[in-house]
Image 1 (tube, one colour):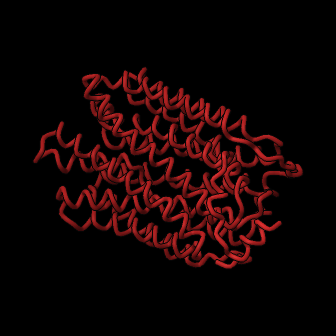
Image 2 (cartoon, rainbow, N blue to C red):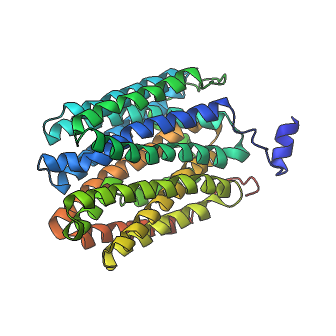
Image 3 (cartoon, rainbow, N blue to C red):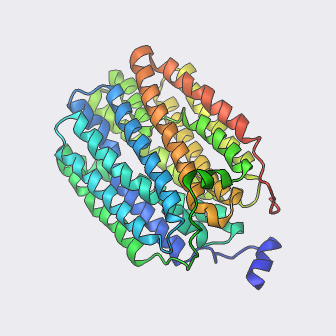
Length: 409
């Protein structure tokens, strides 16, 4: 009892939140992101070698994210009724690993669409389960640090992934197929870490009620929060579009090969800032009102998009744009998860994380397709101007969200 009393009074937990399960989930995120970020980094060049346009990249990212979103909703609803969630997470990580590695078998853009959709289906199934396992492993007062740590570890994988892709491309003489097949190694490691390191606490499954009733039981502040997240997400395009932007803008001066290498370097820089700010954002989430920190992250995204629209695309400005991208994603993802956990009761965590992930997935589906299509049809100013407007609206709306009860934040 003394631990909960001390936490309620605001004394520091002295790293007691960093237990075996939090570490295991963080490592799984690192390995899984390492795997699919290798594929993500080389995917634009692989599609270009097939003659696919930017619109194809938007369709691939958007359809995969849209399918993943429905898997997240179903998984969140279903796993709240299970006594043990961990086996679902293990299967989800395995499917993602196999789907990503199968990029190496593709001979046309629509093959990539199928493989990416399979990989993201597994990702969708595992996401609310992983978040529910993580929230159950820590106290309410340390949600921010736990989710920030997981995001940090995930993004370390996103740093190692592009760096590994860069090395593999050189070592394998730009043999994209072999690079994709090698992603299977860290992908399998992610599933193994969940299976053997993560411990699942005893829990009482929720009573069986209909899906619609479970939705209605989610509190009003949480539903307001979803509106803000959904509007922001409708403009939140996939990072592969930033890689393509940098490649196209730098190619006239540097040549296609060097421009592609610099774009990969910028992506690594983005992910370094992502990793660093994820843990910082988690600490801020445990000390300040989460809606204010989240709104700041959304505002950074708006600034990033406006720079693409209004400023000349020099190599230095592109570097700043990638840095802002890493910062806003770190703050946004960490705060969305920790705020979600705070807005609902623990018995609703699976459903709440599933609905949140679905809203984000629908937003990703819309944004990647719309931004890619606008870019192809009307240019970058219209495409990223669309995103800037929605980012700004999301920041304003999230400020209107207040928890039904407060815990001293």
